[in-house]
Image 1 (cartoon, rainbow, N blue to C red):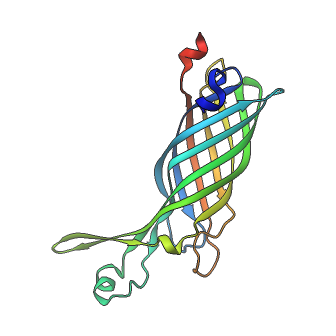
Image 2 (spheres, one colour):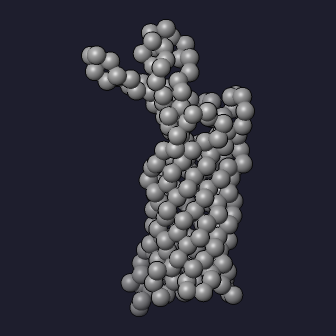
Length: 209
């Protein structure tokens, strides 16, 4: 960003900094599943146009989606099925993600945002746990090849700049999915995520000067 924008980075029209969010996730089409929470981390870039319009791009390197409380399936091994057959597991899918939103700033420094989101799958694991008389046991099943490499969706939300310069933002978002997450499962399964986030610019001292 610094190479592209130079001194214009974190100016009156361009903002760049740290994006953090705490999210609740679930997937449709998984009977009996429950939502899971996680913390996501990345960077953001915002460009301000005239007449209160803005473009915001988040680059999320630490981004996880999925669900928990999913009834166990056949693991292809009688011993493993004996241990985990009556348990529930967590489906954890890690992505690189790029939400791109158009914002409109309202009075009192509130804003609305809407736009597409594309995510690139990195890792995907089904996490099993069971309690035995000898102690707790766990099993991680790599399902990376069963999950679509790309996930397409959208982001919609409302936020608020909590400083007079309209730089530091907090907000509430819904990240919905268009793509079927799994390759071969029957029925369509899409991601759903509700999140509370905070965007903090880097280099505000330079801006103040």
